[in-house]
Each structure stands twice: as structure tokens, then as C-alpha cells.
Image (cartoon, rainbow, N blue to C red; front, side, top):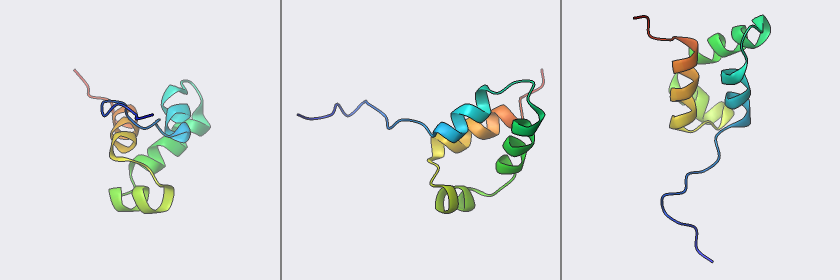
Length: 65
């Protein structure tokens, strides 16, 4: 059985929980702290994929309009 090429790997549970957490000061602090780390630290230390890092940063530093 082959896996279709378009299927992506599941996102990090850690990032998913942090991104979904609203009105939780503890998770917000963790999200901000992780978003401020550089990509190399997030990839090697936590095993995050580029998509996870992008989601984390987008949730931590929302664009103001």
C-alpha cells in the first residue's frame, strides 16, 4: 500500500495544543518563548517541521491590520 504524495505528515501535537490554546497565560508564554527560538533550535531540539514552526510563529505574532 502506498501513501499518496499529497498527504502531509501529522503536525506536532505540542504546536497544535499551543496554537489552539486561547486565554491560557501559561501556554501563551510557552508559545511566545518557542516562537522566539531560531529555526535550527526548534528543528534539532524539538523535532519540529517547517510547517510547525510557521504555525507557531503565526499564532504567536499575529499580523495587525
